Structure formats: C-alpha cells, structure tokens
Image 1 (tube, rainbow over the protein chains, first blue to last red):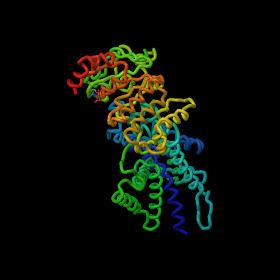
Image 2: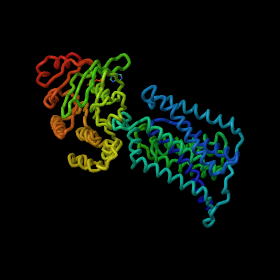
Image 3: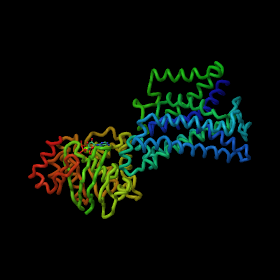
Image 4: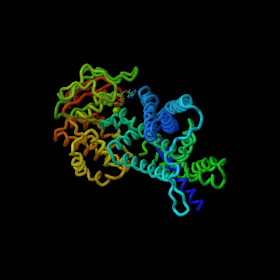
Length: 297
Length: 235
Ligand SMILES: Nc1ncnc2c1ncn2[C@@H]1O[C@H](COP(=O)(O)OP(=O)(O)OP(=O)(O)O)[C@@H](O)[C@H]1O
Ligand SMILES: [Mg+2]
C-alpha cells in the first residue's frame, strides 16, 4: 500500500517534469537550441506569483501574473538570443551562441529575483493544503491530481496542435527547412516566437503547479526541476514529445522510489545512473529517432 | 509584361553573382534561363522571389513594383518558386506537404485542389499519409511542383527540375510543364538540360558569370555561339 502511495506521488511530481521536459524538447526539436533559460522561466512564474501575493494581490491573479511574466521573459530571450543570431549570422541554429546567451539570461533572471525578492525560501499561501481524498488507505491530494491531469492534457493538446493545425504544420516545416517554409509564404520571424511563447507557457504553468503543490520556493527552484526534466527528456529521446512525457514520469517515479528505499540523500544517483545507462544501451533514448537535431515533429 | 526586372544585381559580399540582368516574362510564356554551374541562375530566381538580397532599377510583377515586398507577399501575389533540389518536407506527410503549399490561401477550394493533384498523380494519392521521405526522386519532383501549384501561382519559377531524373521522367516533366502552360500558367524555367529547355520555351536567356550574354528565341540561341561558349567557358 505504501508503495502504491509512492507511485502516486511519483507520477504527480513527474507531471511537472513532463511539462518542463516538453518545453526543452520543443526548442531542441524545432530550433536545435538547448534553451537554458527554461529553469528561470519556471522560477519566475512561482516567485513573481509569491511576490504579488505579498503586496495583496489575490492568489489566483498572482498565479496568472507569474505565468504571464514567464511568457514575456521567454519572448525577451527569443529577441536577444535566437533572433539576434539569426539576423546577424543567417542561421542561429548552427551556433552555440544562443545556448551561451540563454545561460546568461538564466543567471540574470535568478539574480534579479534574489535582489528584488530576497534569498529566503518562501511559502506560497496555498488555498487548498488539506484537500485530499481517500481511496481505501491511499491519500490522493486533489490539487496534485488536478495538476497531473492538467499537465498531461496541455501536452496532449500541444501535440494535437502540432499535428493538425495550420500553425502546427508551419512550425514543423520551419523545424525541417526554414528556407523552403519561406517559399510557402511562412514568415519565419513571426512563427518562431510562437515556439518561445509555448516554452514560456509550459515552463510557467509547470512553475505555477509546483508552487501550488510543493509550496517551498526560492530563486533557484528551477535548477533542480530542470535538471531532472533534462534527464527525463534524454531518457525518453531528444526532440520527441512522447519521449518527454514518458521520461518525465519515469524520473518522477525513480525519484520517489529512491527516496522511499534509500533515503533522500541518494536520490540523484539513481536518476542520473539511469540516464547514463540508457545512453549506453540506447543513445537515442526510449522513443528518440536515430538522428538528433532538427525536424522531429 | 507579367514580370519585368531591370538592371538586377545580387551580391554576396564581394562576389557579384548576378550582374545587371534585365529580364521579362510575358503572360502565357515559357521563358528559360540557361547557364553553366555557378552562372548565377539560382541567385537570379531567389532575387525575383525575394529570398536573396538584391538591388534593381525596377522589379515589377503584374504591373506593380514588388522590389520592397517580402517573399511571403510575392508568394501571395502569385509568384511561386519550385526550388533547386525540390526541398520537399521529408518529415511531413505527402498530404501535409500539399497543405503547406496552400499555406497562404484562405479560400475553401484547397481540399478540392488537392483532390485534383491526387487525380493527376495517383502515386501521390497512394502515399498521402506517408512521410514524403518515402517518395522516389521523380515522385518528389511531382510533389514539389504540385505543392507550388497549390499556392495558385500566376508565374511559376522552376530551378533545374529535371536534375537527377531518368530520361523518361524528364520527358514526362516537360510534358507536364507544357500542359500547365496550356492551362494558362506562365513559366520561368532554369535548366541545365539545354536541349529540352529550348524545345519547350518560347524565349531564353543565357547567363555567364552573372551576366546575360545572349537572349532571344530558341532558334536564335541555337544558332549563336554564346550558348556553347557559356557552358565550355565557365563549366
Ligand atoms: N548564399 C550564398 N553565399 C555566398 N555566395 C553564394 C551564395 N549562393 C550562391 N553563391 C555564389 O554565387 C554564384 C552563383 O551561384 P548560383 O547558385 O546562383 O549559381 P547557379 O547558376 O544556380 O549554379 P548551379 O547550376 O550549380 O545551380 C556562385 O559563385 C556561388 O558560389
Ligand atoms: Mg542553381
């Protein structure tokens, strides 16, 4: 019974890793770009929301404000990493520079939050701390359950959007061949920011769900989650949405099980051990294609 | 005149790839541009499409100045290119490739037009849900042309469409070009297959190192020595 309980919490934290992993995998699949600002977007959502509640904003509005800030920050990153490189050097994806500048943005955002909101860990005034329901002996937190369902629903919606809609086709065609997409009349400079809006929304909503459910937040809250999301993404297969889903859930489960059996100190070893093992036996990840890079959707 | 370019230039840094080219295509015409590798044929088409930076004294399409229009706007106004090497989206399905061709269209005839493509090319119809990477070279060229047709072009520019096709497929390709032209499509055709291109076109230009060194009817071009020299000289 205790194991089953652990399974449930593993899936729930896994749902958050899934969203962050999808944010990573989308920019890699579309733009061949490992966007290091994603942890900061995750953190901004939570910390800005908390900051807003301290000045008297209603918690729900504060959460929305957090997600909006993350999305806006993501667009700033697009403007000054990806688009800048593209305009200057023709093709941003061939350069490591966007990666380095996105790392710069990560550090700047984290330190801005440190300076403005302080370094103490904070507690978001969660409105539903004790909303559990009991299934036999199992305790299921309703907010966590809602979060898991919401996370999976959003990712599912995203994959449908990519597959079926006009914008989705335009995104996939840019991912494969931006020059040919231009010949179809797609404005690359208009469509690429959509990837960053999606990234900001995914990381921001994940940050919001984390803040609501796990309450303990600080300026570096994104780093740990993002590291696990990256592990999940690689385990599932780079640049593949279904891989990110499977990988995120696997990492969540591994984490909770490791804590259960071996204690909290050791938790990173099984996760990264699993990652290295999978890279050894199946370098493309569980669901990945053999080639890594552009054109995966 | 449907398309008119006057003193068109393309420069890549110090490389002056297209030099003072003046060219025109009339409604209903098939015009061909010939020249050796590196003569500047693709650069010329890209300049007309708006995907390569160019300067020109005048660039008019359907009577309007398009020199400051983006490539997207030129596509919308009916100037559509089938690029060198086909450039179909191999990770998209055949059907999605065709839908991408109609990306700029807002009308409700797209589905009907796609059915028309499938009637014309049963091979594409059979593979509509498969990724375009499974197509043979000939089928890929048919898809590239069909994709361009779905944009409802007034003038279609084709960049070396016969490259890599077997002689039978080359014949079919040129038959298709003639058929499309008979249905009212104007065509600007870049080719290395001089023989076939001159058989099909009503006028032609010969490019050498970025310059137009000869122009005229197929008979005039065949009679002059510039055509051969262009290939021997720079090839
Ligand atoms: N993007 C580019 N950057 C720099 N130089 C270029 C670029 N594209 C073409 N060139 C140069 O411009 C010149 C003309 O090239 P272009 O591709 O237009 O020739 P082409 O006639 O189409 O040749 P081919 O028959 O081989 O396709 C060449 O010297 C080429 O090296
Ligand atoms: Mg060429």
